Amino acid sequence: MEVLVSESPLEGVKILSLAEQYPGPYATLLLADLGADVILIERPDGGDPARKHKSLFSSLSRNKRSVVLDLKSAN
Image 1 (cartoon, rainbow, N blue to C red):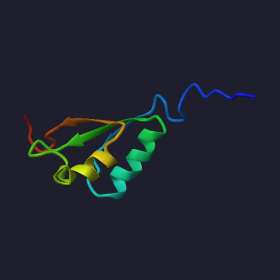
Image 2 (cartoon, helix red, strand yellow; image 1 turned 180 degrees about the vertical axis):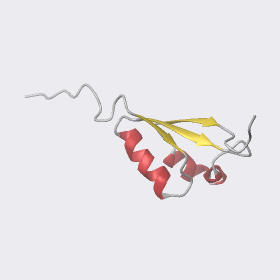
Image 3 (spheres, rainbow, N blue to C red; image 1 turned 60 degrees about the vertical axis):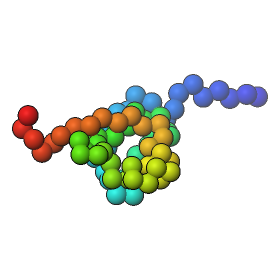
């Protein structure tokens, strides 16, 4: 007997991630792996600080999209 799963458990769920410390990106990685659409909000001055550690950043950012957003400026 073959069981086909057509959709992921979190398909259709959108998550905005502002987390920069290890537990937050790891939690959103798990949510992305389960099918959620995770959008990483990054700082305009260089992005997520984890980008300095390329292998760590790429591991924690798989299945995510990112956008740069300045939340401190009125413009």
